[in-house]
Image (cartoon, rainbow, N blue to C red):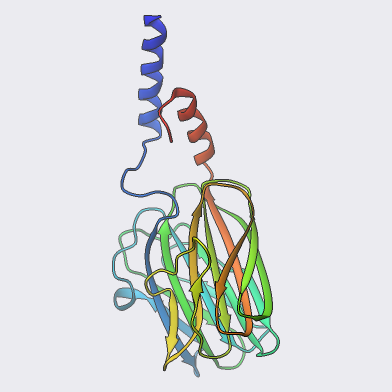
Amino acid sequence: MRFRILITIVLVLVVSLLFPVASHAAFGDFRQCATAVNDVTSSNIVTIGGAAGWGNDLGANPILVLGAKVDGSTRTFTVTGGGGTWTSERSTVTVGAYAHEGIIADSFNATAGAQPSIELNVSGAAVLAYVVLCEFEGSATTAFDDEGTATGSSTTPSASATITTAPSLQIGVAFNGANNTYTAGASFTIPANGVVNAAGSTQLALEYITRGGTGAQAADFTITSDFWGAMTTSYYSAAAGAVRCMRSLLGVGC
């Protein structure tokens, strides 16, 4: 009996050393957002972030998520900066009624300890662009899970993604063509600087939620009725499942 207890204690110590539990933050926790509205009449490049945009340096293993709405459609988007690799068109949707296009882009390996400037390069003719860029708590093994898009004309922009691994971070981005008021969906949060306003006109918002379950999950908003586009993406820590299972077996939690 004593031998079994000793072995259990040793295993708990080994797991705790190999997979320490962060007490200060959890995967998917919100850190900060920056916004930008640019009439890119000359270079078609929107710059967001930097010392003037970020409130703090990026933390370790940041998840950066950029949401944007531009006038015009069939554009090509390229996102660069931060020292990491960007998936520049993770999710895209076009609202034909307004000929507006929206995207979500993301990066998992930006350089921590800096306030980088991120550039969104939009192809084609000059556009008016609304852009929001947010940082969330990630891990060394952050991975993309799923994405979804939808368009419509109503008071409830909504898009769904299928969550396969928990815990997860789900992002929702919605946009419309005229000034509006955005309310987050149930249990979602629109963070500080998560709504983009230009000259009194709000046309883009980002929300987030951390989920403990799996399955099809909608990211929805409430607005005044209008034509809209909605996008959602989800992310998880690839190592979390294995660590959680091992800790559970040893009775030390996750």
